Length: 340
Ligand code: ATP
Ligand code: LTN
Image 1: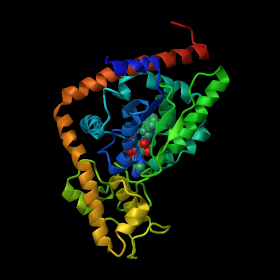
Image 2 (image 1 turned 90 degrees about the horizontal axis):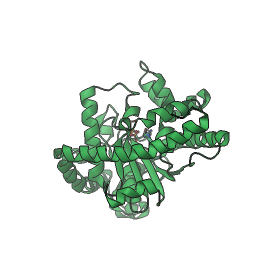
Image 3 (image 1 turned 90 degrees about the vertical axis):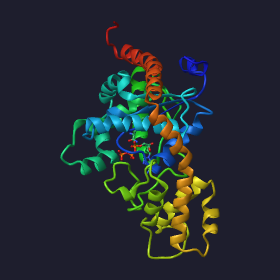
């Protein structure tokens, strides 16, 4: 274990935990809303990242595609700048304590609370022929992921806020019943980029499991594809480039442009003053393509070095398992299970 990594057991710095599902090709929405912030948090926090593969089987997966999605996601996370010398990066299914704590937390979560989750409502409508119990109790597993590591912050996109509020409620409920056990974590949501919308439906979030590939930018899309998708982006029948209510398509493009260029929305609006939608869409496409280029080059390296990626997730899971076990033992003891 390197010197940096050994500090995980000592818990000297503030800690961050987050996860992402290997449910398809990672999108610009995932990157701008969450992963970009994971990368910067590494300078300040002790960061733990997981790919939430247990969560992913709440929707039926083809085994070979699922395996490929997982290794690609791990490679992409490394390519975006997740640094294995500073942070842990592992698969949720490799640390069995996640599933064990999830069972306990299921018993501290009410049916009514789970029924109110918008992600459950959306996903059960979308997969009406497979509304399984896992889809329903998904937030209890997510709470377990987080609470095992006692993080101070959980960096996510806007859509996960409701799940985090439930995590906080479950943690407090357990602490009140048995004395202080879990740290009640704070959501870490950076407003810029926290909700990137679909390019084909500016009222729905950009999602990697969208059946319409023109709705999302995959992190691996080539420059040509990126520009083509932006050219096809749904906007409005107006012709003025400004950020205001009712211009959801343009607002989304302006948000994307401002995050990838580092300019403010006001500066971006000024830059396109008097220009048409065609020029604007092309500029957004070009800016995104050039932002993604170095990430894509690093991705090519990791995807060809699978052994290196395997070594990283295996070593990380070993360290994560030790932290998780220590929390789980405390939980079991407080509940009153007999000690082994
Ligand atoms: P799925 O389509 O399978 O539901 P997803 O694309 O919504 O997946 P997740 O794995 O659920 O992605 O989310 C990973 C992280 O990316 C979360 O922190 C989530 O909040 C964030 N995220 C997902 N979509 C967006 C988006 N459109 N804009 C900003 N952040 C997003
Ligand atoms: N539910 C999240 C993915 C996820 C997660 C977590 C995020 C699973 N476990 C723990 C933060 C912390 C999603 O669908 N985006």
